[in-house]
Image (cartoon, rainbow, N blue to C red; front, side):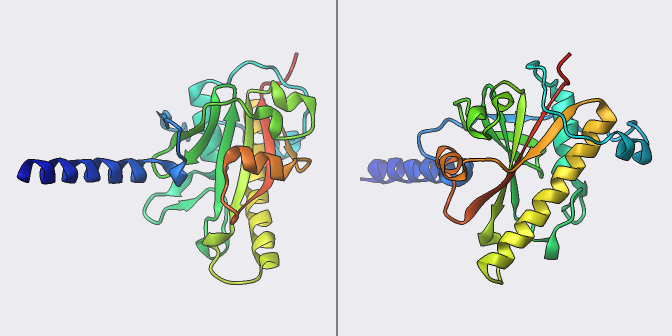
Length: 221
């Protein structure tokens, strides 16, 4: 009797641990966690030069970004720049931090976890083609997806939550533009998305709304 009880307790603990380890409790997915290298916080072009060079580009090389460049990109976009408070590189009303930053690449869909500066695999499938209507999204190395979680905004109407989520996504997008201008990368932010189809593929909750997508890669030569 004790043996059965002990085994049941161990099984319960293991199952509980799996639930907590699984981001969004997505069933049937084996989440890989990619620990990104520490972001390089030195160097880069001066701000005024980045503003001068900032532009949208729609032709991309299919070559992957290096782990270091990807690390720097995600930290610049929405990383934690004040560890004591957990505040980010992009502003957030009332510090709600309600944007989830997803990264669609050839080897799957990942969620950026700023606290650990890591990527958690959400899907193994390549869903880049669902992130926009333009042909280049299918082959560009990185498509960022900005998802606003209305559940993390505790007050206001849906219109208010849409406004704040849109503004928060736009702040992050501009960070990406400036980083790409500094590093000689190509990028374009996009709103032409079949949101219903993409949300279904990403297994988003009803309270999670796709705001924008943004493609990043090396310029096509």
